[in-house]
Every structure is written in C-alpha cells, then in structure tokens.
Amino acid sequence: MGYERIGLEALRDKVMTAQEAAALINNGMIVGSSGFTRGGDTKVVLKAFAQRAKNEDLKITLVTGASLGHDTDAELAESGALKKRLPFQVDTVLRKNINTGNVLFIDQHLGETAEHILNGEFKIDVAILEVTEILEDGSIIPTTSVGNNVDIAKSADKIILEINTSIPTAIRGIHDIYKVEDYGSRTAINITSCDTKIGTEYIKIDPSKIAGIVFHDIQDMAGDIVPADEATSAIAKNIVTFFEEEVEAGRLTKELKPLQCGIGKVANAVLGGLEHSNFENLVMYSEVLQDSTFDLIDSGKMNFASASSMTVSQECYDRVINNIEKYKDKIVLRPQAISNSCEVIRRLGIIGINTSIECDIYGNVNSTHVSGTHMMNGIGGSGDFARNAYISIFVTASIAKGGNISSIVPMVSHVDHTEHDVDIIVTEQGLADLRGLAPRERALEIIKNCVHPDYKEELLSYFERACELRGGQTPHILEEAFSWHTRLKETGSMKK
Image 1 (cartoon, rainbow, N blue to C red):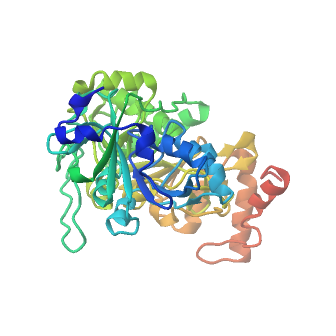
Image 2: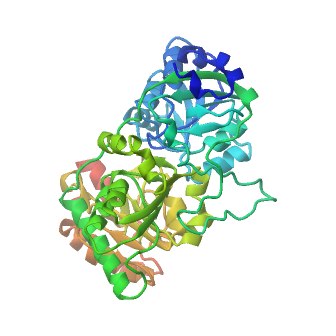
Image 3: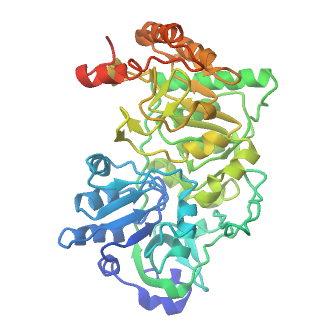
C-alpha cells in the first residue's frame, strides 16, 4: 500500500479510508486544504465529505491555496456542503452557486490568505494536505504545490494527510519551505534572486495532530492548455515588441527582469512568444509553472523558475514528473505567502503580466466581475504583483462574445486594480504605455491603441464630450458611464 512512505512508524496505525477520514469533519468547521490551481490538491477526503453531506446537514468553510481540480468544488457545492469558500475558484458549478448566493465567497489577494490564517481570523479546525511522504520526525513533503499548506498545518487542530503514491519520492528537494514570523518579530524575507532558497525541503508539523492518513494514486487534473489563436498571438507579439523597444531604450536587457504570468491561454501565448524571440537567460518569479515555462526551460531560454504550484497538460506533467531530477536545479515551489510576497516582488523588480475582463479609458481594470455583479474566478495573485511590479501589464482581447462586448469601456463596472497600479494595457489591436501619463493622456493612448474599430469612434466621442461637458482631472459623464453595460443587458450587445 505504500507504508514505506510513512517514515514515523507510530503513525502507521492512523491509516484509514477516505470515508473514515471524512467522518472527522463536523458541521460548521473551518477546513483547510492543499491545492493551488489544480496542483497538489486533495483528491479523495473532500469528495467523501461531499457524499456524506448529501445525507446529513453539513456545511463547512473551505480555505485553500487557490482552485481545486477533479470537480471537488463542484461536488461540494452540489451537495450543499459549502457555507463559505476562499480565496479563489474556477469551477462553473461553484461559480453558479456563488452568484446565486448559495455559497458565500471571499475573494482575496492570494498573498494575504496566510496572513488571515496566521492572525486567527480563520482558525483551521481540520487540515487536509496532499503529501508524497511523511519523514521520520513527522515532517511532510508536499507534492506539486505548496500554497497555504504551511499556515494551514500550523493553525489546524487536526491534520489529515493524503499520501499520493503516483508522485515519485524523488520530488523531494524542489520545495523551499519558509514561514514568516509573527508581527512584531518579523524579519526580512531574504530572497534576492529567483533561485535563492531560504528554507527547508519539508513542512515541519506536530505529529500528534495527525488524525488520519489516506492513500491514493490519483494524478493532478491536467491543465486546460488551449493553443494560441489569432488574438492571443497578436497580444504576445505586441508584448515582445514592447520588450524589444525597452531594450533599445536601455530600460531592459535581453535577459529582461523576472517574469510573472497569470494562468491560461494568454499567458501561455505570451511566454510561448518569448521562446522564438531574441531574449535569453530568462528567469521567472510567479505563482504557477505552466507548459510554456517548461518549454522555455527545455529550449534553453529560461534558466530558472520559482512559483507555488505547477499546473500543466498531461503531456507536460508526464515529461516533468517522470524526469523530475532533470528539473530540480531549475525550479522551486514555495508557500504562496512567499511567491506572492509584496516585499520580494518589489525587491526583484518583477514584470507582471495578468489578464483582465475589462479596462476603462483611464486604465482601471476589472479582473473578477462580469457586468460588475457576477464573480468569474477571483482576483488571484494579480493584485499582489500589479501593485509591486517593476512593470505591471494587463492583457485582454479587445472584444468578446463575437464582438457584442467591448473589453475597453468608459468606466469599468467593478474595480480590482486602479489606474495607479496599471502601467501597460495590451489587446490584439495594440499596446498602450501609460507610464508617465496623466488621466486625459491615458485615455487617448488607450482609445488609439487598444480599442476595437467597432467601438473606437463612440468611445472617443464619450471622452471628448466628457472633457467638454464635465471637465475635471478624470472626465466622466456619469449618466453615460455605464450605458454600454446597460445596453448589453437590454439588447445583448454593447453596440448601438
């Protein structure tokens, strides 16, 4: 069964089934689980709890690193097992329950969740963590993510461990586990380059808190790797061109600065564009390692990548996990309190590239709410990086839903990132460099370079009339600011 993975022999009598472990979770508890964008998520105990909740009146608050895979969030939501969820999700079933009010959702900066746990705002009753093995002193080796595992384990009264035997024990050594001290005695996080390691390869826990151990051999759910399309390829090209111009201006070198990219199609396209560029000796300090990260490493373009999780396609997963020794000196996985640390991001001079739902003419960004009310996924780590990056870039296609929606609007319907934290906006139409520009200058730059032709004339008219009729530092016609969103609701299109 894999008992050799339990180095502390006294714990071997804690082995149980997923159903027995799920019975340790009671109604009203706050449960902390490993998992960050499908990487290293728990895979059997929460599902067993969802089955139990179908027949019992059970509701929990679930705290994770980020999103889970294997439809775990969906099964929990469908069974009515979730009272509250934080800090991030991507599941369509859970999203529906959040937007109907059936599940309460706390959308947090991913770099801050550990602080809330550390401060006791979310005292964890039961932690469920996926590991590859338990060491002789009871310490644990994570799998393909670290997320909030360190603080979840420290806070928890009880710990349930899922030992994943599909992950080779050779993965030991890719993690750098470091825990910040309490406020008042906190020292600097001494990371001065992406490959700096300051911690241990294991998470130290109190073995007496381990209440159950469950074995399984289930791989991480494969990432949704969508090939670049015409729009995302154009966005990637625009960013590469911008980098080239920054090199010519002497503000960057061919090694750029440490890169951070959000997850998904656009991020993979951007990193994929760098593979065929003149840039070299690249490094990454991000949240998630994706296919494009490992492609850059394998091509020799990228020297090192630091993150909190890896979420890749099945092909890439097999390539990396089956050859983990090859990558040990090229990657590191850290707690997200470290991967998303504002202190470290600012020190390293990160180039942050994140996606948005919509941007407005002054550079404010909505990355979470459709039409201002309905949650999509969550802010994730984009705010951690945007506010502290050397260059903060936001990308979006200029139109959506077959052209019925403009992604550049007069005023965003929800603000996640203010104009003060946004340096560059990129669509397939072009790139707007907002650095050093006042609001009126920013508006003209965005309209000129980023707006789809179908909407450019009307958006320019709005701006010019706002300047004439209302004036001010940031001109708006409040009666019209959300008229595009109203038109979309009433007619199904933002077009006149």
